[in-house]
Length: 399
Image (cartoon, rainbow, N blue to C red; front, side, top):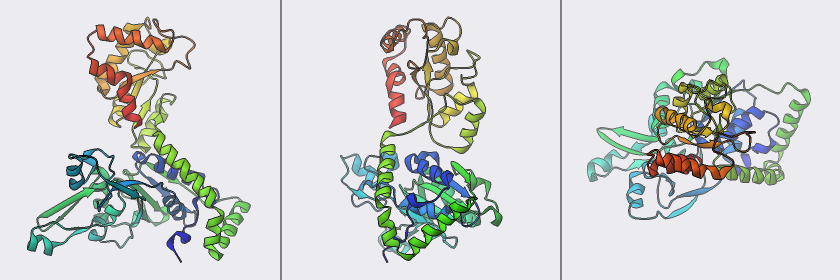
């Protein structure tokens, strides 16, 4: 039987909404940093992971590249061969389907990282790299069932690739490398032992799950499983339309470039979020609490942390969030404080024009931004910095 008929459809899963939301969030926004699913056996953890993998939308890869590099990726994300070709012009591409690379607990270093053909290296002076699971997972999912039982040595190899986005192989004084950027998904049963803190920290989300408590829900799980086991192909065909619709939604969400906005979060919720994601954070309309002690404004520590994620903070025009005269000078004070703490690449305009019942002095509607631009220009702000603040930083975040 073909492998595709052995995967239980994601849309047929009963309940377990936390699992589904966490996996879908990572499919849409891989920069979240992966997900760890913790729960007893029989809670659909592995079934959900494999079901999601079959829904990942196709994209493009560089033709002939063994590491299936993305032809639209920045040069630093490409393998040396593709990076060299890109400097000479556009890269030829072919269709690419992201893969789920399953790491068995018995996997060796060579199986995970790949290996070098030492005979070719010594005889011919060429580095021939035999791909491993980290190569197969590039731009897809690296899945580790019972991750808490993984050997420390293999875990360290995976941690290095997660941290750097590159897999480096070193043998007998010879080294080679290739890009390895993937969504890390782990499942575990806490009753079998805890996870190393170093590995736990690599998961952007951690979700605790349990078996359905409702009797009818449990019976429905059993009914669906029996139907699937009796006729996998027929069962999957019944869910084909739902699966296709969800795949389209995932692809559209990826295209839109969804981001996490913290402007309406409390300070406690902000730090809870920072503990469970590595994604770039957006504060679409927030100001500086150091200049205006309002609970919706961000502290200096929050601003620094946001910038460290690669995120962006947008200046708010609402007078209670500005303090003082709430005029162009006040806006500029908040802007300069943000620039000092966050850097020039992480500050933008937020406005909150659709949510304010009053605006800073000098503002009547969106056209007033032109006057503020002229004011900053007269104050000595260079054109390149103004372009970053007024549009480039937000565009960069949303790409």
